[in-house]
Length: 393
Ligand SMILES: NC(=O)c1ccc[n+]([C@@H]2O[C@H](COP(=O)([O-])OP(=O)(O)OC[C@H]3O[C@@H](n4cnc5c(N)ncnc54)[C@H](O)[C@@H]3O)[C@@H](O)[C@H]2O)c1
Image (cartoon, rainbow, N blue to C red; front, side, top):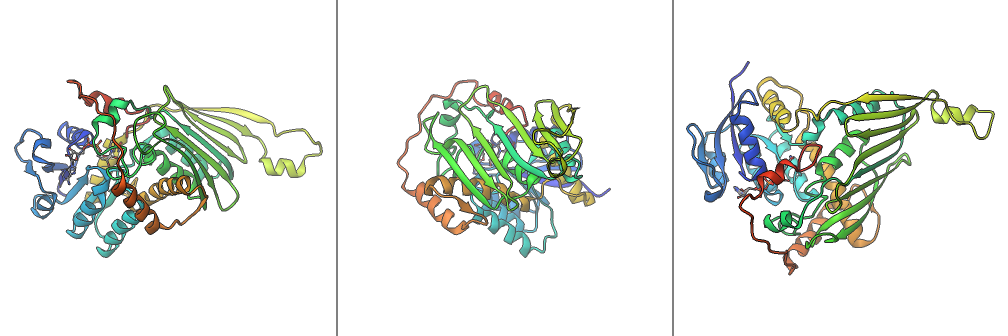
């Protein structure tokens, strides 16, 4: 067993503080939190053994850390991530990897320049959820046969006006680069591509500020077309309560529905295509069995990803969520927004530079004013804990 990793966290807001608390509570092994960085008033009370910085460049160059966890708002992910990679640190990025595909590519290019010798991971904590790891096993093993259609309604990301009013950078083109697709759904879009791969076309239908006084999307329906003709839909919103999180996969061996605590599989005894090709009646269907797979809990989430980062650095463990895969969820979100703005279907791979230019212009020319609400004394800690059932964003 090698020495502990000396970790620095940059960005001590909701997420950075939650990770810090997990480490200080001893929930992750092999990591010593030796430095933190935020603006001066964002820093926690000083703690022995934990150097404090208000300039991330200084923390990176300090010699106090071997690894960095980037927990700042996403527009800064590219700059901080590239700097840390160039300095030879191991890097764990918060989701999304960056605001747009061109920035993701810049991060991956910087990683390539280093010869990919260090660990470069992303906090896609929902990849640890047994609902999705079980489904992935059923798909990858071929047990459910070829996937024919996918439908995911994930509308349990409800957020209040207060949430948007308090987070200054949130839900603006300049500060965040998008709304529900960039902030809450990177997890689901990452799972989508992890489970089903990348489509070849994306069409996005977005409502901008439908439920909240914001300029970005808080309601979206995405349509994906895959190279083999598979169609998929993805629906999300931060304006519906209580909302649902229901993933339906139609495959050759029947219908699989992922609900809270249970995977239901109506299993065809014969694959649909084989049955259709060989049946000697016009209206019969394959016989089915009802299979119920109970799912306990939501997995190790943030703690498991951080532990995996530590294990990958110290022992060469395989990464659960390599950062280089983070470009895919960003491309899906970017393509959906571009499609909604242009009123056209977007072919993948998309034109990343054109998207970046349009987004920058939207940010630079925006005159939109978000609603202003006075912060309540009990501010945001309780909001964050209630983020969503499936593991936070
Ligand atoms: N994995 C998850 O489940 C999850 C959940 C929540 C947030 N996140 C991600 O974490 C990131 C931060 O989100 P948050 O909700 O914690 O935001 P936040 O606004 O609560 O905190 C951001 C912090 O970063 C600091 N900061 C900004 N720029 C900085 C810089 N250049 N140097 C040092 N500090 C800087 C701010 O002062 C603030 O304290 C986002 O990318 C978000 O998507 C991930």
